[in-house]
Length: 293
Image (cartoon, rainbow, N blue to C red; front, top):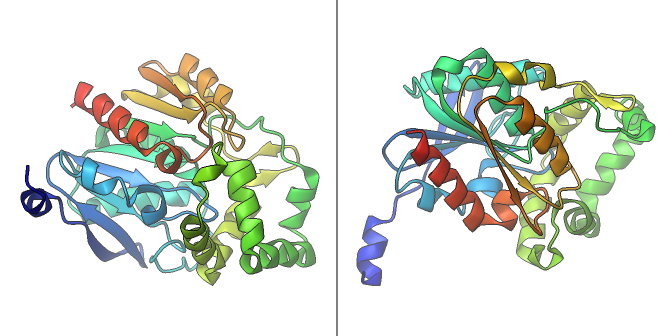
């Protein structure tokens, strides 16, 4: 196909804002067809950072909506600190606001936990569930006591946040040592984009609020482990084998409990699968959805 023709048929990605539960929320949208909703993670993430590059490919078969959580990307900061249940409720309201009765729902990290909570509470609205490096699969992940205290002692909290906001070198270190398995993919452009997101005051407040709500001494607050057997929708677990944020064995254990699930482990890949292995993410997701259309 000539380049000019390909350009004409490429799905157009639009940037939209909608007031949802009193918060002006931003999302990216493209394509037509069965709805596919993409949910990003916490910390330095946004809809564009996790899914922006994949939207044109996914939109060839779907109406894709990639939501910015309140306080992230271009969404307005929430009026109060949000719990995981609040995120689930906001997703429900967001879909209704856009006339989506039922959708394929895919979430990365924290977004995966929200997608799982939504599938448990609103199964009739979920055509399929995809969790990517998902949080919320159990509460056993050890949380260092110093991190727990840092989110509750104002002086320590300000020091942690100040370091992340001021230091691109620290952003580079976190991405290269913790998030990505292939450090060569941590480019200057990526560091700039991530640092811009983590430096936004709204994102800082939202991330710190999430940490305060989720960190417990040596455990995590949100765990759907005991409810996994009740997930009644087709489920894909997509996980990096070298994920240091949520070890892949968490997904393996969840797969054993989920009644209608498929586990795909991506070799030589870290936590941020949509960024580190975009082709695998796009192909695996679309193949899975096609099987459960």
